[in-house]
Image (cartoon, rainbow, N blue to C red; front, side):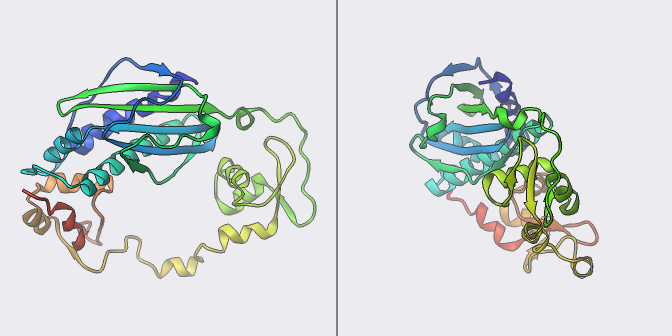
Length: 291
C-alpha cells in the first residue's frame, strides 16, 4: 500500500475536528499491520471504491471521547444516548472521508463515498482486501485518543496508459469522450459508471468503450430542461424555517457556531433571496439533549 494514500485522511481528520468541534488533533507515528486493529467502543467504517483505488477507511472512538466532543459542541451537555453517539460517529466519518476524497481527486483518484456503517464491533472487511496492508494512525486530543486506519490498493488497470489505436464506435454507439461531452460528466466518472454496470457498454481497451446511444437516457432523462430550470428557485427553502437568532435562543448555541454547522451541513438550511440563513425548524430536535 502506498503510504501517501493515508496523508489525505490524516489531514482531513485534523481539519474536521478543528473546524467542526474546535479540537486540535495531533497525529502519532503511523504503523502498518496485516489486519485491522481491535475495535473501539464505536467504529465508523466506509468502503472506498473508485477510479485508481479500492479500499476502506475506519475510525475508532471511545464513548468517553465522543461524549467530550458533544460537550464541546453543545454547551452544558453531560450525557448522550447510544443513538446520539452513533449519529456523531457517522457525521465525523462522513466529513473526514469527504475531505480526503476531495484531496485525492486532485491527484487523479476518484471514489464513491458510501453511507458509513457505525457499530460496536469490527466491520466485515471485503474479501479482496483481507490480505492488504493496513496503515493505522493514532491521534491525541484534549478529549482523549482516537485512531484511524485505511487499507487502500491501487487499481493498475485504471492508471495504465492505453496503447491501442482509437477504434471508432459503430452506428448507434458513442465513445467515452463524446458521451462525457454531451452529458457534461468527467470521462473518468463515465468509465466508473461503465465498470460498476450503471452504464452498459463494450470494453475495447483500458480507456476505450463503445456505449449505446440509448444510455444517454440514464443521464439526460433525469435532468431538467432549461425551461424547467428557469421555473425553479436556486436555493429552495424548507417549508417551516426559523432564523439564526431564534435558533440560537432555542438551542443555546452562539450564532457563530450555528453558522459553522450550516456551512458543514450538520444543520439543514439555506440562504434566502436576501442572503440570510433560514434553518429547517425540525433541526432543533438535534439539540434537545439530556442534562
